[in-house]
Length: 114
Image 1 (cartoon, rainbow, N blue to C red):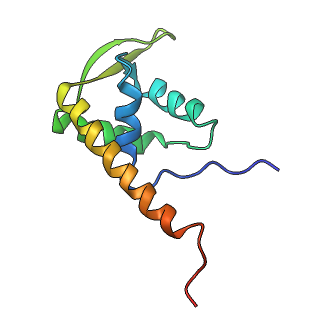
Image 2 (image 1 turned 120 degrees about the vertical axis):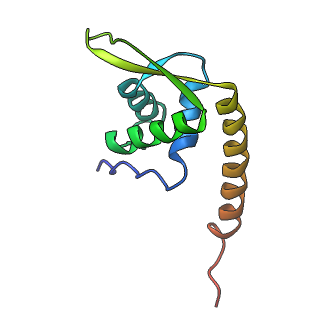
């Protein structure tokens, strides 16, 4: 039986997008979605609308920049790249996520309270 993809936890989408762009490539939205999906063995699937809202927030914060170009399919597409502020935000988000995972791992494998 194939398991359903996991939803993205609130507050993690920015981390996923920043990490995707941290390789230095300029990517359009669909390429970002595909990289996240492929990199997680299709366990995480990000909805288009959620991605574009997150990219808009990150543009406003100065974490990413964008420019228009033509996709590999010959369509006009907006390409995103990481800024210095975005790289610093990625470091902060990774540290926050590591703390979160560590905290949950203290509870998840153990017994429930009596």
